[in-house]
Length: 343
Image (cartoon, rainbow, N blue to C red; front, side):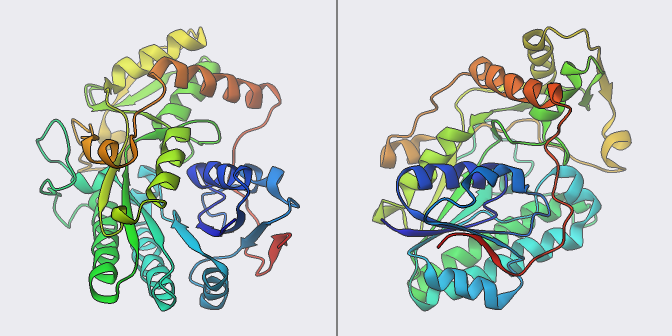
């Protein structure tokens, strides 16, 4: 049994990772300020032997230091997420992503605690490549457009992880996650699949930004969690960057049509200009498909589900929430600087 720390562990991916690690018999600490995560995602784990939840911000150094000192392995998933949040709060985005990551790496380096940094396919920017490989050039837009501050901050995070690995010998691995979907994901910050599903289930207009011809690949959260755990079990992964995603793409317009059909919905599909949805000068990528050969060679990674299977499970989950008059919302309570659950 190992003692694992997950930063951002009450978020969508983090909570599924916590589930998997607890199920495997590990002792798990989660630290999350619930700014974009939800206590509902981990409520079923509270009180479980070996699980402890810290409702706090990583910027509270004393708590973060204590959590990392207890850990044998750290999964650093805490970050500003969602296109709406990034556009509306660029200061928070940069401060959260860069300052918190630097602190986590610094504290992990003290005892050489292995750490996995969750990065993003956003770092590839607006490259004209159709398939992205880990050693490709990264192409971003101008600094006058806050849309690129998230990608820039995650690039800095990756450079920091590599620097700590090279200069201080910190066992660190970077996972670039492509669009990940599954139960517990909320559309509140612009995540496209839960937004489309909620609109379709309510027979409301399904709003597609731009012309809808931008294509994306969507990955099952269980596949992502399995890959993260497997990478941390491979010493040869340290110091490396890995894409984690799906091998097939779909246009956003076709995704809207697919969601509408699977929901049995009467929703119209409406195209909304980027300017109306996300402000003047917003730029988007036309393609986002990962080359998965590197992660497949190391851990045998392959996507386990096709898109329809993923969507059906998400639709069933969201239909249940709506039927109970509930929604996946962010906790509104302020930080309580104490742990919950048992050690």
